[in-house]
Structure formats: C-alpha cells, structure tokens
Length: 89
Image (cartoon, rainbow, N blue to C red; front, side, top):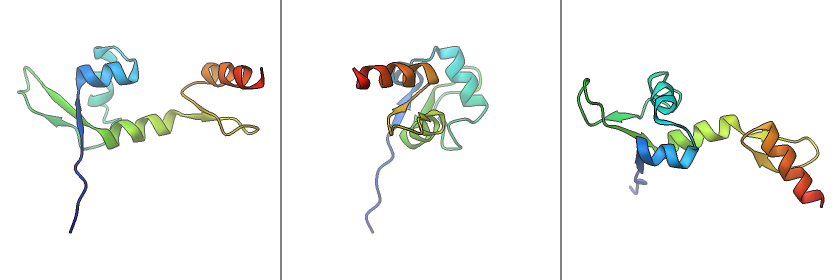
C-alpha cells in the first residue's frame, strides 16, 4: 500500500505563504481553521507549531472567490476585480 507523505510548514513558512502576520496565524491555529492535523513540537509555554499542507490548501480553497462570468479564482473580491480587469485588457 503506497501512502502519500504529508508535508508540514512552520509558522514562519505559513506566514510567508499566506501573507499573514504571526499573531493572526496563531489565532487561526487556535481556532482550528487549518483542521485537526496541526502539531505542536514544542511545549505549552513555547509552542512550535507545524501546519499540514492539506490544512493550508483547504483553508485557501474555502476563501477563494469565483466570478459567475469567469473561472478565475482569487483570495478576495478586490483581487478578483483586479484580475478580471487585467484579463479584459
């Protein structure tokens, strides 16, 4: 049986990938927005979280905005408007 290997990201790596600050990212971790696969390699006083790639992808997919007239995905309505303007030009 061949199972895929789950990739994990540190808080710093996830910050850079998602464009969030560490406080916001940790608040989302504590709210379990990235699923239940988050691992703490540190202690309660000095946490060292690892976030699974599948959790980051699911979180990103849940925040994508799609236009009815276009299959272009974006992370926000503003980004969608900018992309639609660029594709129309």
